[in-house]
Image 1: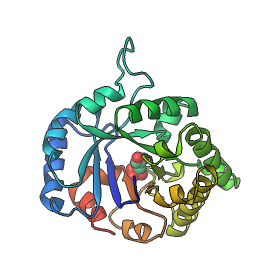
Image 2: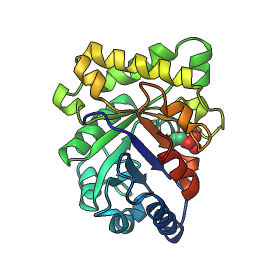
Image 3: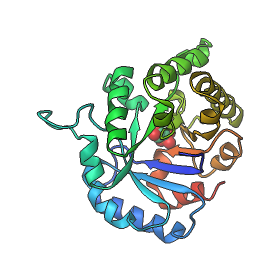
Length: 252
Ligand code: 13P
């Protein structure tokens, strides 16, 4: 995908179906015809089909999922495959989110398999990477980001990588109210482009959209989105409120 402005709302494990539908309707009322920004709504699995009906045919609004399984189907009780996601209209899927890494012990090899499944089903991965506070304080953040990125993307061709979106989400900023400064975000996003250029080429590095995530909100989005290498946001808490989420969409 060529570089574009993107705001994605990851609802995580929040909202009832009715609350989610109301939230989407309120967002659509405010930004329905604002198509300069790609908007991605990422609700829990159980609401995907219903929210797809609300979003379909809306200009530049897309449906995303929070996870998919490493396999395409079979005896995996409780799991959801990428082709199931595709059948309910998903165009994007989060892979590598720090909550999946830390609470569900997911590893690089899982992310590779999940992304392969996603791509097979024409779903674009939003691949998340980010360092812990300990890794930053011990000056290991560039090394950690290099490893998280390289271990996964080296398994994909340059053509497959063109379908990736990346999200830099420092773990210490997620849900904490402690946002990365614009300088910290810009520094890391530029660094990530450098890693991509080393693995593929400068064209791939320039074309990949890199989102910032971690306590991004209506107050700080504008400052973050001004950064040259920040192409938008992956929003958690602030995506649960229509006014806040819309203000973020209008922050470019
Ligand atoms: P918060 O915006 O709540 O910090 O969450 C960010 C995030 O994890 C999005 O995927």
